[in-house]
Image 1: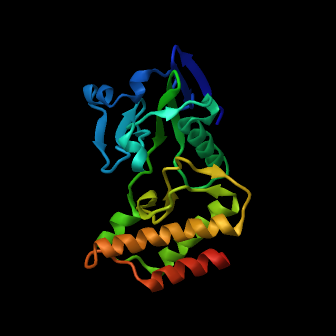
Image 2: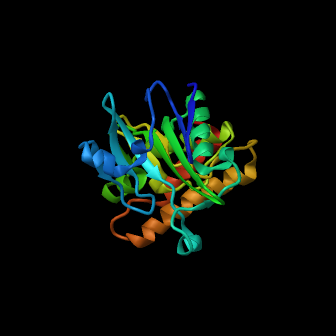
Length: 241
């Protein structure tokens, strides 16, 4: 995948020419898709991801980068400018591209946009939607997951870690499973490629465990996660089987 790059005044664009033959700000405006009846829905949560259809019936996800935590009280979506290559959109796009080239189960990047204004910037990213998939969180709200799938998930996470891929927010909402029972990791904002090391890999796994435990406490009668499930995941992650 060889990306194309374009600048129009204060707007910078990065895109896959195999998916888009041209790019403009309208590609990152939800109102544009609503006007052309190609806005298929919106995900819940802070990320406010929009499900869109691009030319050629390519199903994608448009996400505007938004602040979280205490910084969100100061600014909803502005980030300090320190160069185009250091923007969140550029970094995530190139990380996704590297993962696709490594054949890791992650979304294919389609386009990224950065608007630079003085000391700050805002940003958006478009990725290809994983077909017929739901999050691990949603799945476990409905039913218990088989032990062999927990082991498959452990192997999936292991495959990313072996390639030095760090996910900054590995939680049950950022893991998808499709109708063929294949797992994918999504939302690599603030992710990066690192030298494989037990410390950050263990912290990554523990973050997922805390996410599952939190959802269990929030839904004591409606979330199907047990310690034995975690044991199956860890065994597969540690042994590769």
